[in-house]
Image (cartoon, rainbow, N blue to C red; front, side):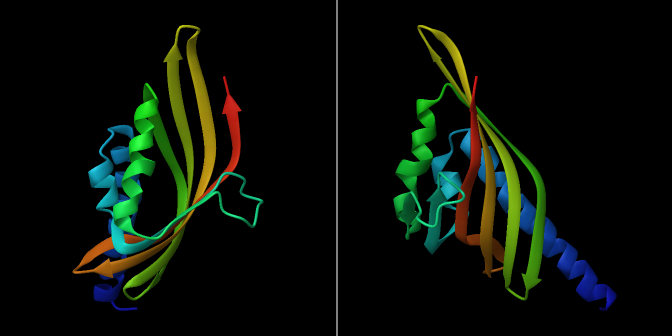
Length: 148
C-alpha cells in the first residue's frame, strides 16, 4: 500500500465513523431530517428488536420513510447514544461495518423518571456517493434492554 492509498483509506475510515457518530448526535438532538440525510435514497433500514430472531421487527426501504422512525424519539424526555467499538472493511466506494452502541432513553411522568437502556449492534453497509459516505443499509439489532 502506498502512502497515498494509506492516507485515503484513513480519511475514508474517519469519514465513515463521522457518519456513525452523526447518526447518534442527530438522534439525541432530535434532528430527524439531519439523520435522514445520512442515508441513500433507496436505503434499507432494518430493525431487529430481538437480535437472535431471523425475522425483522421493521423494514424501511426508502430514505423518505425514515422520518416517523426518527421522529419517534420525541416521545422520550431525553436520549443519549454512546457509540463504542466499531470495525470497518473498505472495498473501494463500498464498506461494511459493525458498531456497538448503548442507547439511553429517559421518560419522565407523574411516577418519576424511567430509564431504558438498549444494547445495540449496528450492521452497516456504506456507499460513497459524490465523495460523501452514506448508509446504504443499516441493521439495528437489539441484544438486550435494561429498565431502571
